[in-house]
Image (cartoon, rainbow, N blue to C red; front, side, top):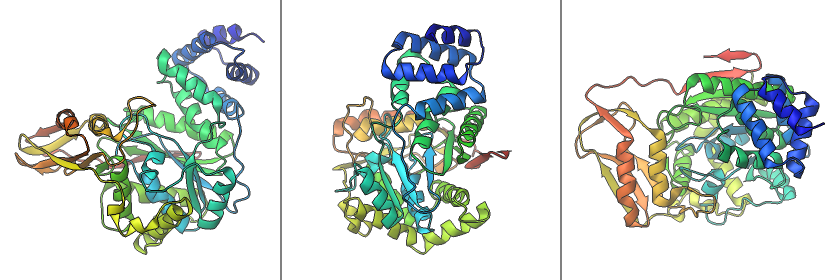
Length: 440
């Protein structure tokens, strides 16, 4: 088998066989197929796409490029959740404890963030003492004992994806649905859970900004999971504004705790309960989504979800006392308000620019080697549809370096559109995709 034949074949829009895909991924991973040939194939895929069988084959070839996780020592149906990325998206810290409190084990591997704010690992590591570097034995034992654990992805998990993503990033081949879907699903399948709930974001703060593209990606990922024998559900959620009010690592941990204490309402709580309900349904812990919502709400209102978060923090080396004393989290030296320069209604937000504003405070990374300030970020005081007067506080910027404020505030203001007319605010949950079909 010769690599160039697959390149030519895909350049002509033909389908690659399972054997050709396996050969290419194996060769690229072990170095026998050079970057320039892999780049050519990626560009051909980007231009001509892949059918569902090809995409599933690509995903499984990537899964088989490294180790896979065996969660069978953990009893019960293991369920995982993945978000395609967003701003103010702290749902994992809320959902995992709620689902575990309902008796469904959550064994989750997460990554670090590159961009607006840190990833789930960065958020958890803002908790003093919290360890995300558990060994596999410690990970399995933690889930057995507490019902949940969140750790970093093994460096040996899906090495083909790491190599391909680095190449896609520099060859303009990132925005291809088959390549995006296979990248996400290869890591989820290799992580070993039986059921997977995908939170596919759409809007100005999402990777997929078009609703149709978001549904197309969701359908592709559900198809891959189904072919791999996994129970997969994709929920399409709006990212036309940040999900929560806090953007920044310790700030988002604090907000998640407030939601679990029933001290905060809003979109973050709404999305978390709905996603938790889907996870419970996927794990066969309830008969339908409404029943799952009831279970999740009861776990939250009773305090069992908060207690489960405390169990996880203690199990992974942190001090659970911070649940009752949020001052134990890192806090910035400076909190400076961003004031509105006009009056009217918040008509829209450029969510990505709001995330960039938070990154400028030190809350995120523009390069992998950048160090995150766990205390930095911002807390929004207004949402789309809210009335504002001149001089009202739009957000509070949290930072330790005052020189960063001017640019962060400028970017935040540029992200907010204020008009005379009050806008209509659309729904947060925009649809669901399962193996049985699409519901909009």
